[in-house]
Length: 251
Length: 386
Image 1 (cartoon, helix red, strand yellow):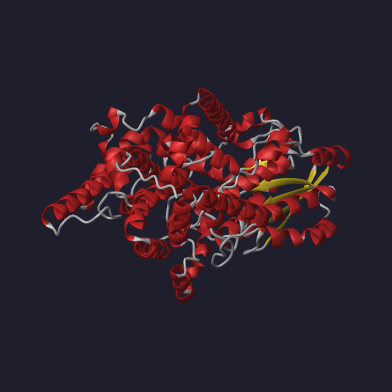
Image 2 (cartoon, chains in turn purple, brown):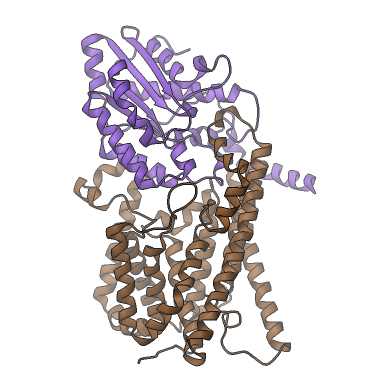
């Protein structure tokens, strides 16, 4: 029986095969990555100080486990890419990722972070834990709005990062309401949204990264984080209207 | 006391409920390209509104007659029996959900999803999870409609009684409850946190409105519905909603939505049946009633027969749809998830729903033919399942 199913599926795979061609790059089409919201404080800081301090705040999906985890996770990849593309700017990325934090709880810690690190840009990855816990979407919306307002009022630009595309758990917990709320807050507060969900889905659908794969191997995870880090760098450069040096491609 | 109970079944109800059941099934399969055909992409409301409205309509149709002929106690008892059947069906689906989750937990690892896999924590506390599920407080994905339905039926006997005494007062009471929820945010608490996805205090409006229409309201509205002005307003609103939803699919068009409009309109709240959603459903219904009449010959055609069959066995077919959506997603995850497969899974699912509905009809026909003398109009026999 399983053989028959398998044969049938191979046939189907032929139908969809055109789309599944492996591609080596994880490029992101502009319409998924770029928007109209600008990072004006980043632009000003780079022009004035030639320095850019970025804080990445998030939960477990902003980290990677294992010995080289911190080096391979997307905040470090973002830092490396930006340093490469902006050789004249001193780029510094600090990470504050705590597992199991709702947006509301994360936002409470913003005062301390702003005081200690004084970032010009805060990349706020959130939504996953709220969705998993089934936090009331209205509460999530309030926590998110308050957090973004707080960051903006203390002089930091903000980029919101939403959930990962996770096909295996799609029928385990529902993220729709939280995704909509993040889009809404990004639009209302005019902050760029890094639509990790749509972007990772794009990589999966174009065959760039197989996100259905079940594996203990860290290779796919490293690749996802590398690609996320590089795409984030492109978003920052675009939204802050910075001039990237074309000569050196990121590692 | 005005009692207006239609004598012949309105096949339009079955037709559109059947279609709604298909759409709900298709929407429940994640990462499915076929999702694009469902109405939620083209306006504010979706198949859930259709399903709840028609369920209210048929509940009043079936139990209203019982209440008229046998009195409120018998009718109330039948309604409660129906609620119990739906509860059992819900628990059955919960068992399937747990099976799927247990499988995912034991079979799937990928360091990318270390965070997402934490959601399965609740598997470590089966005591709390199962008890909360029995209390309808635990919310498995895609299984929010049945708890809503159960609560609506539990509250239905007094509402039906009131509807038969004074339909206007009953509808007014329903609108008042909706307004109170709007003002004070009533809802039922969920486990471990949050509230019900479909707030019964809000969604009862559609159910009671459906019941009101069944008990003579539709006739009272018929003059309004026939007026070209109503159709014009309804069509304009549908076009407006379509234009707005376009900007969701193409965020680059978002700037076309004026800021004040966005601030007034968003977020469009599904949990509390946003007024915009309710209005969208009304507009859809008005246009449908205008162009598909009660005696439209197409309703008897073979082409629409499958949808009508599904609509006549809504509880079974709804549950089957939830189950098939799980299976479909499982097959796509385990074997292959390309576009061809997504179309195939959706198609096979709908065919399975039709085949099951046909089988159920066959059972009923044989039982009616050989069994004891025909019972009066009953939820199980009239095909008018609430």
